[in-house]
Image 1 (cartoon, rainbow, N blue to C red):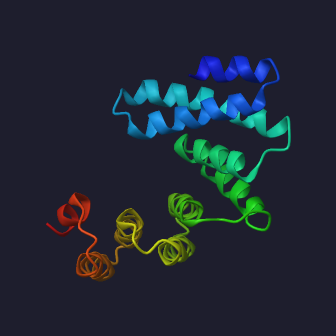
Image 2 (image 1 turned 135 degrees about the horizontal axis):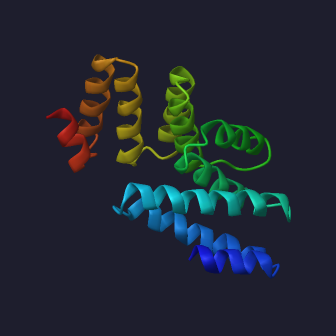
Length: 169
């Protein structure tokens, strides 16, 4: 997929290149392959995304994809900078604010991260994954009371996922 994305970029078909990068990100998120191999592929994908960002002015969706690539390859500061640029120009959705919170959490900006994910939950209250991410931030901050409160609240709202049940033991 990355080879095809790169070939599209070189031929000037940037939209097709972005499409291939999107498929690549979906595969990486689902993959349980070797961490070293994943890191190498993410490095290649991230470099291609950076190149594409510089070529044709990217859409909000393409910039979000680049921010995901940067986050997955642990380039947290670059991902955060790109996402902050995106805030005034796009229509951020729950996924955007979830990623923003994850990036902020990776940078130990825990209060800001919690607010971003809380905003994501407000935009998509039915999504249990967002609640689970918020609980993870509280756990990282050492606030176990809030972890239990958020997870129990999710269960009482019918958000029953294996992750939530496992987290509560």
